Amino acid sequence: MPKQVDYESRRRRIAEAVCLLADEHGPQGVSMRDVAARAQVSLGAVQRCFRNKEEMLLFAVDHVGERITERVRTRLTASPAQSAATALGHAADEIALLREEHRAEARIWLAFIAQAAVSEPLADPLRTGYTALQDLLVRLITESADSGSTDERPTPPDPRREARTLLALADGLTTHVLIGHLTATEAEEVLHTHLTGLWERLGTTRPRKTA
Image (cartoon, rainbow, N blue to C red; front, top):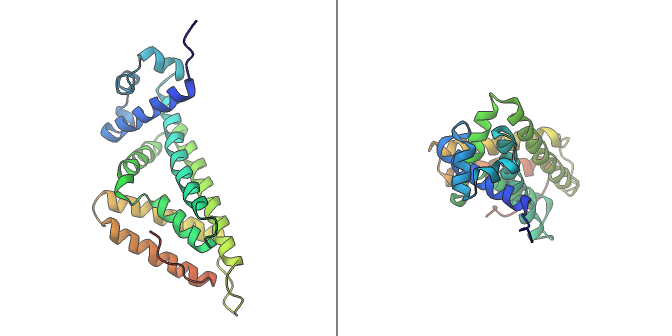
């Protein structure tokens, strides 16, 4: 009886190999032959999963984006009783990729972004991923504002504008840590200071500092 092949599992395995090679050589330095060797599968197996290198890279970008998004969702659902403001802090912390265990993932993500600047097909899934993260932040900011104090305060900030600012800040901090301009601790302080100001503008109770 022919051996059944789990193509989705194989595609994810290949995507992990792509990410490892992209971390070492950049996406432009990734070849299907090298990916096959790193994934410990035949070149034919890679070619049966992906028609060409571009398709393989696109899948790898989606793979990394989904991994980050899933980690954010997992952290948000781990404590269902947490306030919207606390959840917002947790989401921003995960998106910024400041922890040591996420350093390789941060390098890979930024390597794909750099390549996407000259590759429209690669840029498209990245825009989709950023839109999903932005929508999540908009929802959490809106919920934070809705649960804020009823005391008289200035008009609440625009959730979409604040989400864009927070997402851009998180990305910038990722870069600054990777090149050594900031330590992870310094970047976390910058992020927390921004969140504290946002919570004040939203009229919410300041949560404990995110871990």
